[in-house]
Image (cartoon, rainbow, N blue to C red):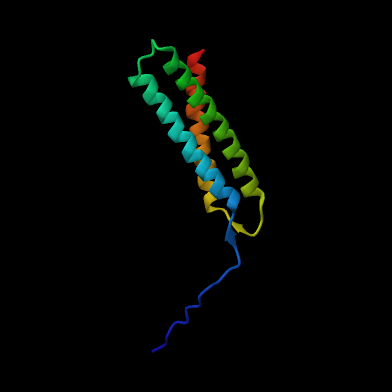
Length: 108
């Protein structure tokens, strides 16, 4: 009976901090997006403060999404790093970007 030799493969690769930042900014962008949608759906839109609040949430969320895309692109370009967080950050920020473009284009 032969025993299979299973080697433990260790690596010096680490997760990129930029990928983690990108994923965090994407999630925060989506949270602010859904907060703006909630304010729009359930808030009294006759009040001027609610209308400004919706716009401010959406603008801040859109800027966070763009910054998250920039960090994801930086994380993708780095070598000798795991790219798991960079891939997830890129995916979340692209989804958020599509949602923001839909909302902003429907506002005009």
